[in-house]
Length: 319
Length: 258
Image 1 (tube, rainbow over the protein chains, first blue to last red):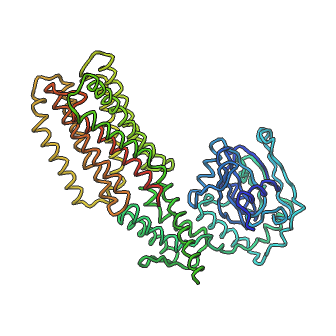
Image 2 (image 1 turned 60 degrees about the vertical axis):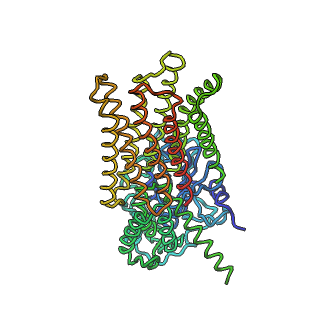
Image 3 (image 1 turned 135 degrees about the horizontal axis):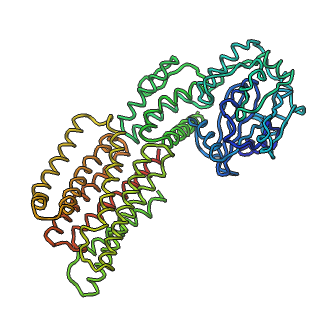
């Protein structure tokens, strides 16, 4: 039985955490994401302001899906794009930030895997520690699977760094500048939390960094080619052919940068990672966002995806 | 469509009430009194409904969306007109002034036109690249032609008369802005032509047409002391705001049905 995302979130929140409940305005989200990614920590950055909950997954060094929930309720339909902005918005509205360890595929604690020894997060600044009554500092998460269980086939730190940098940059989750991962304590500005936390990796974590996990191109989480084609149809129907032409032109331009193209009603593209697709989608939607707004675009993406999946389902049923 | 019926039903009630208040004539004293009360209520309820329509449309957008600002200004404009009408009715019913013109209420009416013009200007800025140059020229020509016709036939005598500067300024301001709101409302309709989003803007353009007619009629009637709050020209105000409300509610529906 498939577990709901709410359930997965609840399980994740009940599991190990790097820290819990730091004031959102004191957390530099970009640097936190970079830090987690650099260390290959699988987990989620969780933000809540009491009315909305957001969760950005970090999977094998790359930002993954972002889930949003009504506070305590089920998932809110807020697909792609602006996920980082919304997360930041939640944090900035007096919300709190937590980092939990786990993966979206694992609904139970036994499936939560991470480095066998997480870096120790030390909050050196007095007031920040004092403001962390609910915070937890984990030196190790001994009861979970060691990182050796994960494939480490390409010890190429430079390449990892490049891939990571590109992936984070293009996904819009972090700022382009990725600090050097070799010695996190060497640079006090490397602190992810409010610019004041100092991170001391354990020897095993350092060894992990040196080995460098394989960063593979993540498969797209959505059938973007079909979604974009469906979106074009919906934009014509809703806003007329003029705006749809602007959408198609922007899509064509964005796809061309990655070896794809628009041919008639079809969107043709080589296999692209999810993060690249998101960049393409964002660029294609820019003219529509400018006129019809972000909410409309997000709803259109969601509706187009539903239509695509329903069409696939009915085709499967026919077959 | 479940959520849409209450505003549309309300609009239908307003139209029905307007037909009674402005369509019938004579009758007993009680009937006359009812018509006056109804006319006063209508002139307040119609812009209030328009404001609700604009708020509904506004809520279909995310914070920061540009069209959200358009409908926000639309809502503020409608609320300004509502406040002006409340003040106008206050002068009439409690201030002992049969025709409070010009009065403080005109400040709110001017604010309405400024805000609604601002809203349409914001929308035009968004859709201008999608409107052919020829269409733009035709719309501008229509606006100028309408204004010239209104000026020559109605406004010129007032402007060259011995009326006070405030009266002259208001007489020129209302119809001038209202006439140019018609092509301004049509511009987005042309920009989104072929899509369902064009229709709410057509409703806005029709609203502007009604308001322009009402403004010219109001200026003409007040100048010749023919205005009454149950005069049939007032139906144009109600119609204008009902169309504006329909535009707002329609836009909300269109935005959510992707």
